[in-house]
Image (cartoon, rainbow, N blue to C red; front, side, top):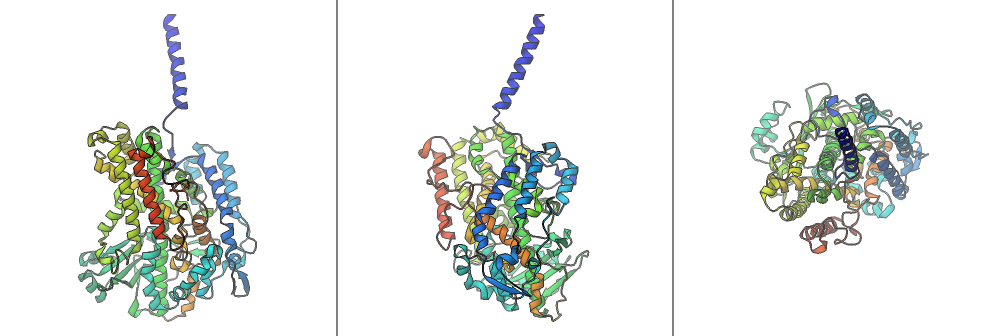
Length: 628
């Protein structure tokens, strides 16, 4: 009898203890999508937090209202064919219905009635990842949104009058328009555009090509051009490899062809000025291992301009989905998931990372689940295509491969070769990203030195080691190449890489990051509207290039994408509006060593923003987290 009572008492105590533990648990339970069931074995784990999806949808709807004033500023009139309308009408239709908001509300209702089991069910996910719409049907598309532009100058319609953007941008219009009509301007414009305005797309993809590297490339492409061989021998040949898109065919959505050309671009460098000149573009033919080569001296004017626009398109799509989303969304979200599940809230590493670990997982989930109404208008018309792309990119890829210093070293890009008058003036985004890296490195260095007494303390931190093990496990985080974290040096490298990705993402929220460079869409076209490859020597009207470039409706989708970033306020600014020394992450007040490092990090960010912005700096526009 006594034994039975003791057993019952122990069971009751165990139950009470279990519920008390669950109520006061210091970690969370965050699950991830079963991507291995789809054969996606190389992509890092993508977490899902069900209750964050409706919150994210609600916030996105709010942002739709925030950018309304900027959209209303698309007010200049244009004539295309039989239609004379303002830019906003051409881009969004004569009845600008809020179909994105309606689709999000529809999906939000679906999520609120769902369970985690359903949202991670293979059959359900297969259907959602493969569909080209959200389940909410758009009204019939207005014909004015299906028009190719008739004059390169008409691409200015995407510059809003709000905040003086159109007035400030007008100075670039003539030259940038000529890059679509004049082959010499197109060549001169190509590299500086990428090197100057590709910051938000993290375009560190340029590679130095020596004779050995060129020989390997010749096994795949018909490279038999003396000029290229000579440039390789003289160490002034560079390449941009965008052949990853060969895994996809051209797609269709809403009656439009969307095409990202798989291509490789060779550029030669002037040893005196350090300027890069595109010389040949190889575009892989669909369903073939053969390449069409566009070499400037033997190309017609129109075909050469086409080749450069095709290359810009591939660079843009690479920048959106690999440079930006894979590097700055996917990998950090994986580590946030494993952190939430492993590290208690009172651990110093949690206190370091948690303030910058909000919103991202919910946004990524919405992006995947509501692709058509969240993603920019590229040829990846389903989230399944995106997952296939990043799975291909992640194969044999190690965690630190994407650190900017390591990327530049691997690609043979040196400051000496890209500095004519000032450091990195021939590749400005490199200097800017390296500055963000160095700021983050200093912050992390201060944290590790003050949070851990010795290498041994790191090696024997059971919680930290469990986080790393979970992050690298193929059945859990699936991140390769993190390596052993058993010293201050290795922990600093790991944390710097993670926090840099989150912090650097914030550049995409500044007005100057999008306007005017990205919003003049032929600079960075997200798609071509034809998969026809022109014959290089064929003479055809240069004006026909406009039929390949984004039409009026696609312009609208692109601009809405950019405006969501730059014309809405961050949920939490990186620099608190009350001052750099408020809302501190660590105990001990302003004089605590950890908080001194945090305050210095914020001061460094203020200086960066002030230097980056041509006009009045948007100090509080840089977000603390990855929000969109």
